[in-house]
Image (cartoon, rainbow over all chains, first blue to last red; front, side):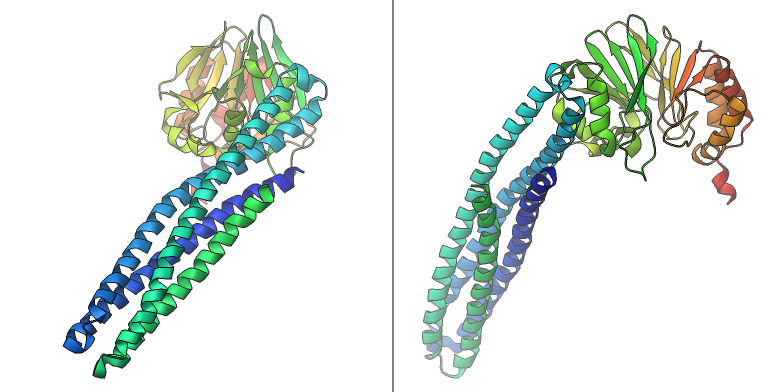
Length: 208
Length: 244
């Protein structure tokens, strides 16, 4: 029973650590989007009046990349808290396991010396933790959803970019490449977020 | 885990050790309890792996609310790696330990344990009635190291000094010093780094009135065996690893 509980604690910690690692990857991708947007801006400037419609698009893509980076930074703060929480919980589970071993050795004496009540206290703290952990992981899930909203906007703008690129004459292929780069980056972020959400939601489901 | 009272007057000294449930590859350790009214101190409470046995043995002697203090002679894991577990079940527990090791020993817990640093020169504390002196034993073997002396019981808890590597079922007390000294030789020659520190410690300890010298590994020295140990240790060349 103890090892099963400890495994659960380790899983919580590993899930949060995985989310942190994946979010780190997202910041890299969003920086790449921002770079593509700046590249597109330079191409549009060279294209002059042929690519006038591209200017607001590049600004918008850059804004989306910045927003994603900021959101990820915020989520990382929450994920770090969640990670500390998960470590504390794993330690607590280990403690409870070892204290229960002592309880078994002591038999009836465990009631008299106050150990049985101490175990109840520790179990109660663990339950409170699980409620708090659930709240905190829901916050992270919510923040991940907010990134998804930003990505939907980016997807729409990618479609518009392709349309605008057809009007850019000699620069059409350059702008299409940029639009494609942004589109692929958005897809990558969506995949990463999906995995992160899966990690967190699996733990939420198991807890219930 | 075996427990035995070694002093039983207005307060008690109890030794715990020879744990049959201990994982085979970890070194056997002695833990000491001083039970003084509603206060209990554990000296070198040991590592994580033996926590359950030490807790059960301690609670066979006292109640959980009476476990108030821990003492760590130095920073080694077999001394105090169980700190996080003690701190989790008794959040307001005090830990007395060398000041210079505070930042290191805190790594064994969540970091918020009530650490009472012992300055290099040593210090003392009163548990409930008994005064305990923290005697400097630096470089024997750790760079910041203390022993605990109880002038009333005439007991010196001597940490790794006097330690012997023994089989799990060994007796609690030294019964034949000549035979026993061979079990201590390698440990002291290799683990104790400084002849100067050794001589200085022996000079100070000879001034103490000691009935029992209680190491963290091996057997307890009683009566004349304490003097025999000091003479033997004085003549022993330590810090031998530098010679290859």
